[in-house]
Image (cartoon, rainbow, N blue to C red):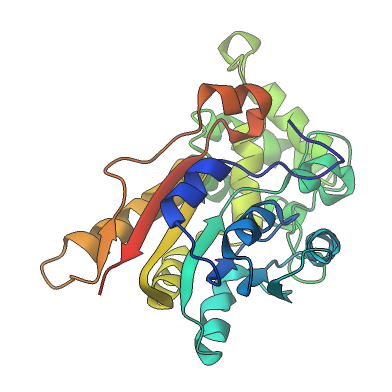
Amino acid sequence: MESAGFHVPVMVREVFEAMKLPKGGVYVDGTLGHGGHALEAAKFIQPGGTVYGFDWDIKMLEIAKGRISGIDNVHWNTFNIPFFDAPELLSNLNVRADGILLDLGVNSGHFDDPSRGFSFKEGPLSMKMNESSGEPASAFLNRMTPYEIESVLLEYGDERWARAIAKQIVTRRKEKPLRTTTDLVDCVLAAIPAGARDKRIHPATRTFQAIRVLTNSELDRLEEAFMGFAEILAKGGVLVILSYHSGEDRIAKQFIKRETKSKDSHRFVSLFEKPIQPSAQEIRFNHRARSARMRAIQKVA
């Protein structure tokens, strides 16, 4: 469950059992969020350990900095850049990490703030991780062709009603451009018959996920980022990837397979044959963990 308004980190026990961080070690968090995983990492690397934390959302970063400021015996370094750009910065600093985490999920703080446009509550249809740059989701949806919208919903959201939803979006924007989250929700509800809706999740969940991925170009540089982070691992270091939908997990799976199975690669091993999933108990207390999949790769040479 969530407490004090902070995002609850997912699969904490599993992440750090895989990493086995040493005292005085170096931990990198590519998606710092509210700092939940980083605070746990500090327990293992004290005293004298170092944390490098990255987040492209300045609001999230400021919250994390407030939480970690009171933790002694750890060197904290935080950066307001997306994790895609972190490997180059770390390489220039000659960092060699004992553990790296990429939690690709959206921070609950985004969902809880209607003004960000990630939730189904009334708010601007934005969905931008970095509020200071880029176009909002509404800009994409108001100019894309029906085929383009359908393709995005299928590829990034696994939405089987993609064609019907795309048709509703294009029809409705002719009368009035989409501006709010409820505009998009209404399109989804009009497209999916009540009897065909998944009872476990909100009908617009997959659509919102897909449009968020599009708006922030979340998959475009994902494999490049995985490769960059793997390169800065120390010998014995572990890169953990937490993904939340099939597109992310597919890229992670392919990356790990290529780096561990090819006849030319002897530097990395995969720690799990299949992705690790949250326990039933964790899902019961934190329903946002239900779709998480964890994969990990270790540098051995």
